[in-house]
Image (cartoon, rainbow, N blue to C red):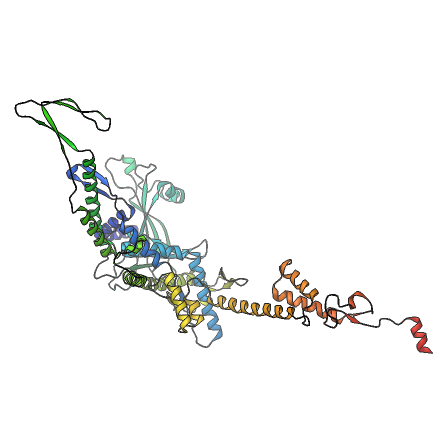
Length: 582
């Protein structure tokens, strides 16, 4: 384990090294959040931007398309041909999907897609959660992430990483009051006091360090007293591997987000639009000047006020108005800047619900949108595929290291009646080798469904492969069983209808009434209702009744069709016995 001083020094060094990159991230963040002020120094006025924020539009649309489909993990059997190994492989897949569901992976991937596009980086930490007894995914803000340098740009798992976040003095005293009380430099505590937390993780340990208040000369000696940093917690890392995964966007030699190039264009467009509005406002209320006549001394007797309807009166001069008209190329410049932003950030007009004027057919529109969006979505999804493989391996190591021999239960929501299963991590995790893949990287959910239907129609894809690729089907095996059961149920219902329509068939009116009552009133399944009706008919036909009793009558059914009970002799009377004796 590292000491407190070593962790703090490492944090400051990495913070200085990442300074230019984080400055660019903050500029993108401010623009995405709308925290942008356009300075107009020559007019001594600051105006809020009032132009369309194309960065937000492109970021939202691209990230939602990336996260519109979920990837699927695939665990091959450790031993081919072994039914036991195949069963463990299926259990591994279901267990990993259950862990994803518990971590709300769909929502986390949406947030991570925004980080990847805007900041060119998406960081996550997988750590043990001792409350749920499961690996926990924690998405980190790239602005608060300081990983160890990596020579290989394709390597996503750094040897160690420092994550930072802010916490309040109340939370700190409530959770670690006995440790930090009288030891940490708190400074001047108020409702806005925040303290920086450093979470360091590597092969050996997970350590939590808190930084005290800055040493400010304005503070009193008592407020300045205390340690600059303290170790709050340190637990061993039993997995023996790093717990952080940093996914970086593919660039030439340094991190660059998709929308970094539109920032300057946005500022120029917003500033030009603000100047245009100021000129229009001055044109509505023009500036007036008093011009003297030759040989006269002008004088204003009454100041004019157009809003109040007051007429101005002057003596010895004339009033002239100075009209301000925006440049005739202002609108052209604004449109040109907007087009440059769209080209630089790959933000087509379709993202805003508009159609370009140079597109005449729907097919051409799809081609243009596909060339703009699909390959970027495909690359981002490919990065998440590689990242999720490393994250799953860490999660498997956490399960084996902390709860290896402990029986665990997972639940697949889509499985009816058999959704809950029990497994032992050390038994099913024979290996952590697996794949994670999107069903069709580069396609959103709408185009994916259309493509699957077309391949099924042409016979190029099996139904089983289509079920595995469809993002709406979480369990292809269960869906296969449901399709078969529905087909068998439909065949059974058709058979009942055909036999009931035949008067000489096995289903007589009383039997159909009994079957209908079981299904509609008692909510019995169709196959169980048929079984009960069949057993009832068997019992009736096997019974022997006295001639003339109601049970021996066919009722509404035709005679001899099985609706009546059998006719038996019953016990012989005394007269019959005496007659037999002669």
